[in-house]
Length: 556
Image 1: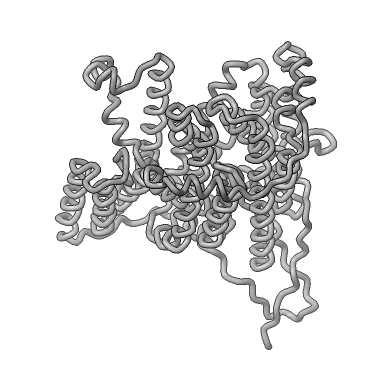
Image 2: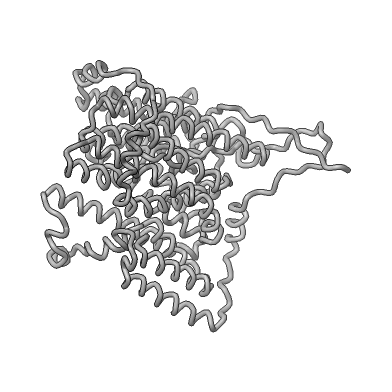
């Protein structure tokens, strides 16, 4: 019988679970845009007219184009694999880069020149360089992903999630716990169990409304603030700011020291997020993802936004919430409209921060758990190893911010005084530089040592030596011989592994459950049917088409 193409699966643009994911993810992006708006105005002293009239509309263009693209990418994947449970990748302004471009790039220039526009120009040039590096990474990243073990990729992602995504929201929550904890409880019940609200009311919206009501009833919000913010609402249309970008690029040499490692960080994080989505069952083409992320940063910079967008951590969370393909496009469009209308100043006075940030802690919990659930139990130590550089980077950022608030720096206090107080600042600083790449290298070395694949361990240790020597990891800037002692340490590790490889030890025998893990994370074979064309399509794997949460979704 001649093979025939199976009938195209019915793929709705919106299912019930998209509503939950939309309110959850939309609130996530809302928080981040509110944050970057406050940073521009309060830290760099950019005029509100430029922030609301240029930067946010430019970001809005990048968000709507990017989220529509990822929606179409998800629908193409769903049709190719004949499934209705494909979830689009989440996309928004990169959270770590929001703080880095403000505090590392723009603020020093503003403090030196007292000219916020000069600082803005440098931020645009920096974001543009980041985008170019990510575009280059689109052709390098797939090979890294092919050879890097899953524990290393997911462990680095969990490190970001536990530290930079979870800890600050957790601190904000417990500062106003009477508002935040009820919201957090509602999110946990609605997104981690099969309990549903009456009339299928979206749990994300319910949590936001409950937290907002508690905040207003408790006096945490102010009517005069809302009235004042409402007067500033105005329509803004994005336009190209090539003059600002070109001026910033005219003095781009000082920017390369941070742009190169952070561009590498971007495509490494993109690899980890694609691996995270694959763990949850959705196998996206890494090159397509990185090309979109790089293009988004370049276009955003040309329009006036110094905040590179990227695929977000959290795909498994939105999949577990029932999100499919519609939530991503809806989020991009709604946030873009709010940017064009200049609504973010008003929204900041309506919704309490404590009612919004619990969704970030939920994502942190889910991604941290996934790193252990989706990797072999024997590799748990490697996951922890990949976590450690990110914890070190977060710890040093907290120390630096604390000392800055006291009007001093770690260099002024001195390593001897810090070490005497039990603060190993110098070691944490070295460990945390280039944390994403460092976690990937360290996690991979531990995985291959556990598996007794000593040649591969030696190769990754050698890569760690090279990256340390040029400053991409464990170095404060890109330069030749950035950290020779650390590079030498990695070379010693490579030599030790090479010696053990000479004994040709038998590789570790996988546990019985590892074969099932590998089967789940391999891309499925294309659907081929030998049935007559009139046959009905087989049910989609992973759950019903109405967007309800498959029981296995949280576990990847």
